[in-house]
Length: 103
Image 1 (tube, rainbow, N blue to C red):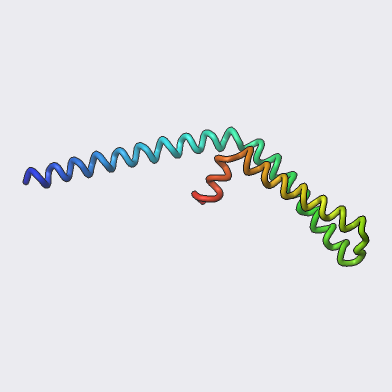
Image 2 (cartoon, rainbow, N blue to C red):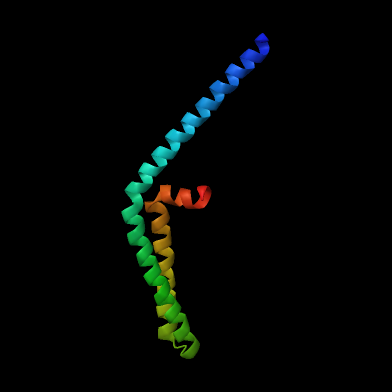
């Protein structure tokens, strides 16, 4: 075999093994961190789901009876919902990374 082709082959094998190793290690670390965040993620996402359903009911109420009190209640729910979504992104960065970029 030619010496340049042999060197290229060895180099390619080395780079491939290095890339496979780094991919395995990074996916292992990401999976481990995601498992640690899973309980928090599910609790916050359940709260977000409840707030979202309550907000949907509130907007339906606004369509039928738009009083200042109902408008204030809906805006408060919307603020709470936005805050919970930000909390979810801050408290579960690895799951958020997976959902945003990997999935």
